[in-house]
Length: 163
Image 1 (cartoon, helix red, strand yellow):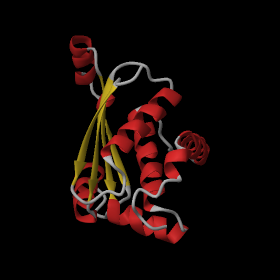
Image 2 (tube, rainbow, N blue to C red):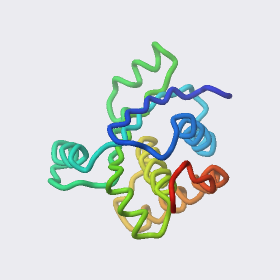
Image 3 (cartoon, one colour):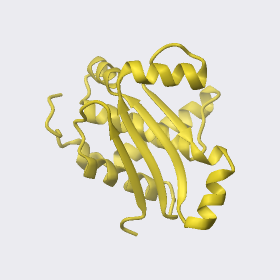
């Protein structure tokens, strides 16, 4: 099932994680989640200013956040496109690297691990997960721990950064 994911990576800021690693992580996570259809998603690593603008525009919250997910499957267009192309359009994940960096530092984690944590959170949202209450949040966090465990060997590599 190698190569079932088209990942579009937009780097508005530097990333400690290489593109090939991002691709591998998302493929592992999708397999762990039982996604077998050819699919497509985009990941944008950006600034606090950019994510604040998106947060204000789409969530009406005028503040930066760590991760936003825009699920394509919330509209009927991706379903129609999938019928034509055979590719499942998942959507877009946007991560603020400065916010991720601050969170990683506060938790004593590597930035690459925090970015993986946020990306896995965004992916779950693209696949329909949500956390409107404490129980669903706990389930989602458990799933994120499971996804990070699936890439643990990669996370032990520094990706050129210090802890």
